[in-house]
Image (cartoon, rainbow, N blue to C red; front, side, top):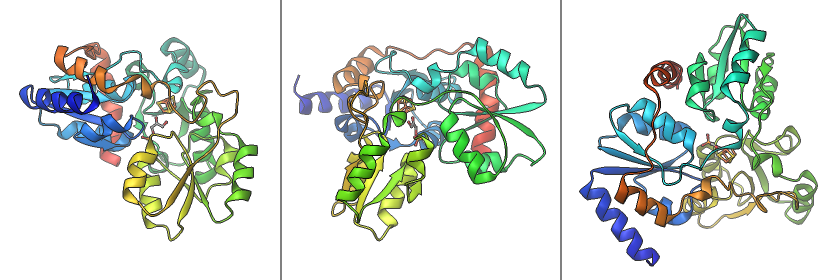
Length: 310
Ligand code: 13P
Ligand code: SF4
């Protein structure tokens, strides 16, 4: 089926089934175009609370769809490809994390939203890249903190807040693939460009950045900055919405290592969702996201704490 026909059929099905499509900025352009809402992890969680529909089709990765399900236990949440995972979420298996928690008694657990529902159920507060600093700062200074699963975001927060945290050793394969050597070469070619970076990037990349923030934060920054050229260190899908917001500015994707398995700054998990899979998923109302009730109830508490603090 050609793209335009597929899009039309999806929009029709969406109406017939009273469904909404929530999409992350890293989704392919065609999916962002037919989505009801496109946003970052925090925006998507907030939107999921307000959804007035019977079905939520989540165009993103598994942990995001799980979060939407936890926030909407009575709605059907579907994900176009169940294999759309996340290297950060995968880096933190519940059994190992339970042991890690036991090794650090008297610590509270703050987890980055990029983790499974089981890990959220073992947490005190969830955060996203938009609100991680605010959430950590909301915890009294004398309280000991375990931060998981992203060590790069954790290190960045430690630097910004000046407080120690115990970090889980996880990372994002896409943001760890940026090459500092190539980035510095690119800066020589574009001395007038500002570097903006997602905090999942490594410290040496973050040190070069004029602005560090979530995907939504980066889009706002390029809108407000007086600069006309940016080197963007995050997943390349963001360039679509970003360019729409600043049609006259120049956006250059940050370069990755040649041996990067993704070949470029694309998240292979995010890109598992395609327009055809969105259509099939809506038509069949499958694959559906299921979270055991006990996990749902436990995971809801730290997510709600985050939403209250945001
Ligand atoms: P955001 O919180 O900016 O949406 O980032 C999510 C993510 O998966 C980044 O890799
Ligand atoms: Fe996970 Fe990284 Fe992909 Fe984001 S870009 S979904 S953190 S693997």
